[in-house]
Length: 585
Ligand code: ASP
Image 1 (tube, protein in one colour):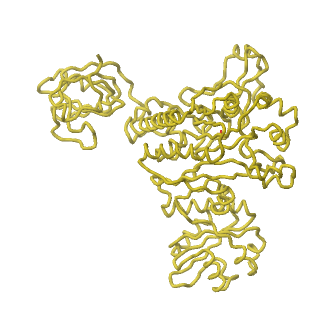
Image 2 (cartoon, helix red, strand yellow):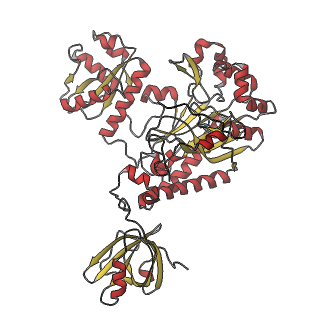
Image 3 (cartoon, helix red, strand yellow):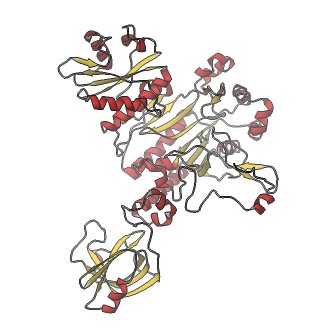
């Protein structure tokens, strides 16, 4: 037997016991006649004590051990002279009588402590050492717990976990596919699933009724902090359901996770139409931890001779409560913020509603105090407030103001990671116009059903932009954590949709033929949703990056710097696949 206990479990109750522990040497300290070692494993840290006076040989041996040596120590549990209230084992230490080195270690390239001295790159290169650190380990523990809770919850609700293939024919989810050449079928390729979308719909045709899978998905997109080329979804599909059933089911799952993991209970999640989300927050994933809703000002701000406003499609602003005392410098910083290329506004108009009731604004030349008061009233502003206004093309301006709103939320400390504000965004547009290619794309995916009352608009290309989908997203704290839709199960409607998206009969058949065929054998009405599991974990863990919740993540260029992938393959492998590479350069 290697050990009798772990390094996280001995307390004052164990005093006097003879124990054996195994773990890694985190740190050792020589204090006069004593040597102390912090021994670490997954469960915690226990202090080992060696006494020069009573056992010089053993103490000398302990002093020769380096950081991250793997050791086995046997001894007696004794009460510590100076206790450490920060450790669960902080009341005791082990008076060691026997010490075995199970393995040596090179000096690790960074300190394996909660606050490491290692930079991001270095820690990723030696991720197996990074994972030894408690904060990373705790993130993986949280992830495990959330996966187990999810599995149990859905299983108890009648969902079956079914695995779907990883080597598939391309599934369009709006991103680029990763492809895998087939050796047995030269010149042909598999795609890695962007999601199991078509398979889960087939499982509904197959009569499984309720499916889920905690599943890896692959999308070849440009990366950001909250994106990875491979990521995990809680993927679900249900038959004979309406939107209401789906929202209730997965709201139930979200509430269960909140309750179990965070001890938080929620009433029904608010629901907001996509249209309102854009109008009031300029975002389809509004952070509703704080208000600061948009106020549209066309009726009060136009027609006063300020041409920038007069010529704009939309004049819209937010009211920052209590910020009238912002200095010139602070206002300049906000102007610089909205002018950054990432935000892209031309400028920022401010109106200070001073505490004494007077106004000071960047447009004083064009507006009388009475007119400014009318604008302030429209905002519901009080003396002491600061109004921030943008103008321009409607949608673009809303998106810019959304960035400013979030920035103000940060500045005013209104976005606390411990506060959770979930909501459903519903009634997304079915189709999205793409300027570059001058055509419509499915906003969600081509299997999403329009709202029945909007279906006739499919016959009128001029109205395509107005068609609403039976599609929904679950949003928490400004993060889209999941989304799904009611699917089209009617072949005629699906064909119409394909045509709207610019597919010919042949190209639709080539891409989706097997799903369309299946639909001719009695497809039940069905709907589904997928949660981004990595994001959900990072949100529950109070972190910004999903990388912290993935054991072996990729960096910003999609590389695994630890294993060194992607990497060239041997010429023989290329030959076997009958592939030739174009010369580089
Ligand atoms: N397959 C969709 C996605 O990955 C989710 C769904 O519609 O169920 O976003």
